[in-house]
Length: 110
Image 1 (spheres, rainbow, N blue to C red):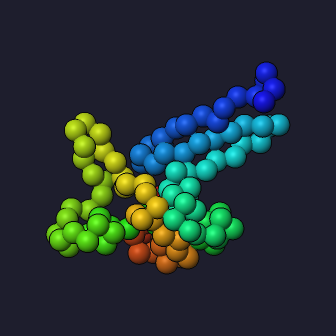
Image 2: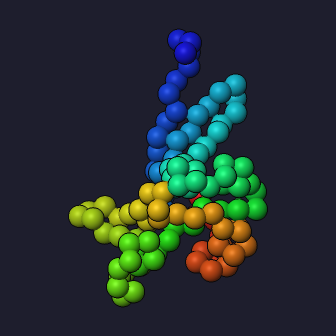
């Protein structure tokens, strides 16, 4: 690593999603933690970063085998509001149109 190189900045979106951003040569590259979790869980990286797909957070009741009456996200932990929990088991890659029409009302969450 050269002296001028900096480590990627780790940040959180206004909605609470964690991401790393790297600036190199006037270009910014961003990767979300939930994208990395999908890859760690076995998803094809090309599909994770494809323009036509999104990484979807599963409801707690689906991936933890909890009662279906578990409250939906965001999850309140003390004074912190988490939009979702990032683990390889809690995310899946979905077609963008399906993901956004089902739980995001047509907009992106990342």
